[in-house]
Image (tube, rainbow, N blue to C red; front, top):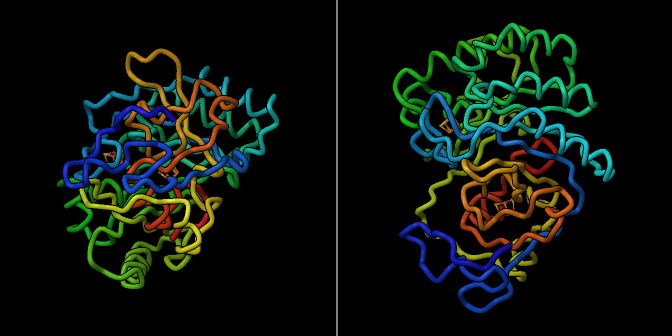
Amino acid sequence: MASAKINIPPRIQPEKFQDPELTSTGARRASVELVALQTLWFNTGTLCNLACANCYIDSSPTNDSLVYLQLNEVRTFLDEISTAKHLTTEIGFTGGEPFINPDLMDMLMLCLRRGFAVLVLTNATKPMMKCRDQLSAIQALFPRALRVRVSLDHFSQEQHQIERGAHSWEPAIKGLRWLCTNGFQVDIAGRMRWSETESAMRAGYKSLFRKYGLNIDANNHTRLVLFPEMDSSREVPEITESCWGKLGISPTQTMCATSRMVIKRRGGGIPKVVPCTLLAGDPKFELGDSLMEAKQRVTLNHPHCSRFCVLGGASCSTHQRIQ
Ligand code: SF4
Ligand code: SF4
């Protein structure tokens, strides 16, 4: 990664997360080698019909800092997976709201026809429901290979809407019920933003799923993923090489050991590859234009590395440790 300064949120000590190789105390910064590219993510663009209070990528109806990825660009990366014989089994789509991208349906078909498992992250509201006929047709062709992960931040309407805005609950529940009723494989993504314990959160979701007759196991950590909160202004420690042993964590457990994400910046020309779904915003974390260039080691030089991955223990894909 490049060594220029990154933009650090105001409450984090400004000397932290500057040198990619050394922490602010002069210790060797932790880094992660790509073990195998199991999951390739495509960011379909940052536009979203919602503008959530704490969206990690600042999506909104007007933010197109990451523009729509196009079908031919996805095809180029799938071709590279094939020619370079990467061990990729899963393709993930995230945004913004992926269903806003006009090429999404064709992208799903392309990936599924090539034999990948596909995971789509969505808020399950209007943009997804506008695509429901096409989505149903795709699901009928690939019922086991397509998964949809719906963001439902909390099991209560009130808390969910604190994050997602007024009138965001009913459309999400409607979309979620439609997916479950029509036989889709559905997972839920919630947030540990509130002070409840994990077991209280899971119990709350369990009641919600029972109320609506949704066949989702709230105690299954893949079916209900509870992500650590992404308060980017909170102080966090930097991760050094010696932290792995102290924390009892292996670098292979982080998302960047087994995944990469393709993004396309407004005005930036061709798509770029970044280490993971969390570091799309800062061009300094770009690894290259191809999967070959993006094989390089990743140094954990961003607050998200500490807060979300190493100390929060989270991953976006279906392959890895989630909580
Ligand atoms: S729905 Fe997702 S992408 Fe859209 S603003 Fe909310 S968190 Fe961000
Ligand atoms: S945010 Fe997580 S997955 Fe991304 S580079 Fe940092 S440690 Fe790796």
